[in-house]
Length: 291
Image (cartoon, rainbow, N blue to C red; front, side, top):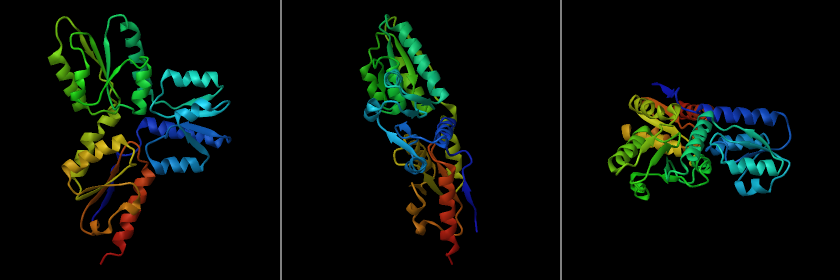
């Protein structure tokens, strides 16, 4: 029987590991613990922590809380969240990723120093994403969010531009945005850019390519809400057409499993190792009854 391999470089990134560790430590103390938004874009992991006593809330519910304990996930939050907590006597358990916090400070400092120079603060990222909302808050929501190159029409290339990136965006996409802006700047306008992409996340793409090429069949495990999962799965599919997106072991089509193919199991930065191990066990179970 040929091998089943779990990608050693898949699974939670440092920021998510830290957030879940903090959640488990706080839950062990007892009492109610709220989490502002899904701690990770993975329903199974959220369900696991909720069974331990954590309750996920949205920003509207957060604004009505008083005298409570609330965990902030790795994505980071805008200043308004901390202000609400102060006003409502909410104890914040801050699990914001250090990489995100450094980026927030960079954007805040640049906004402060450039607010009188008509400089356009630009964020390459996904509109509405939790991290991007936190970054926008550093500029009093004045920054311009660019999701794709067509969005660059929002910019005035005759005025100064300062470009940042959401930490989980692909490096090649960021470079394309840089090249286009540089080519369109006019007059004496200045263009600055800061590479704020997390290498622990961006390096997943070359790794996932190699992993996909080295296996006959790929089962990519992630939650349906995971943006990172969608990006990485697209890379798998590009290099190995026999790649399948699944969320739980029950999603596996038994007809895809045989005894001769090498099967690779990988996942997003929001996929826990235990979930990939459950998929491995299911594949072994299917194989055990094959003739």
